[in-house]
Amino acid sequence: MHEMALAESVVRIVEDHARKAGAARVALVRLEIGALSHVEPSALSFSFEAVSQGSMAEGAKMVIERTPGQAWCHDCMKPIEIDRLGTPCPTCGGYKVQVTGGEEMRVKDMEVD
Image (cartoon, rainbow, N blue to C red; front, side):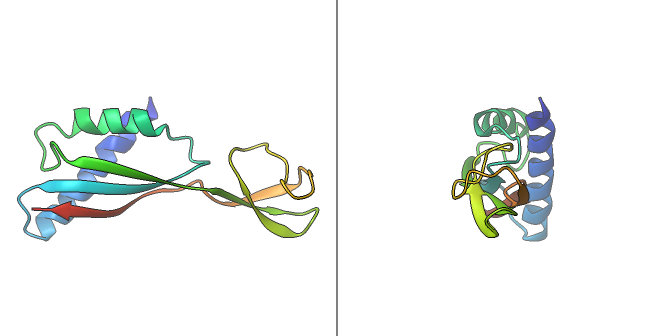
């Protein structure tokens, strides 16, 4: 489960930023996760809770915001939204689509005490 490794990275990132800010603990972490990122939000939340034990992020609330998959359709020459890879263009039904966004995962912001 790669969500465990991702959760460990999130804890490391938020702890680094919290220390730099002189905070005692992390209260909330807000993530943006693209629809095409292959990250299961519930597994990530579970993993975050487990790996944050004993860290500055222990007990922090995790809020996950999903961002849509974005692509360019080479058949109708338009930007489109897709919810998974291999999906045809919702406008023309063509399959010549190139992903342009929605594969990323990032820490959007956090609240500290």
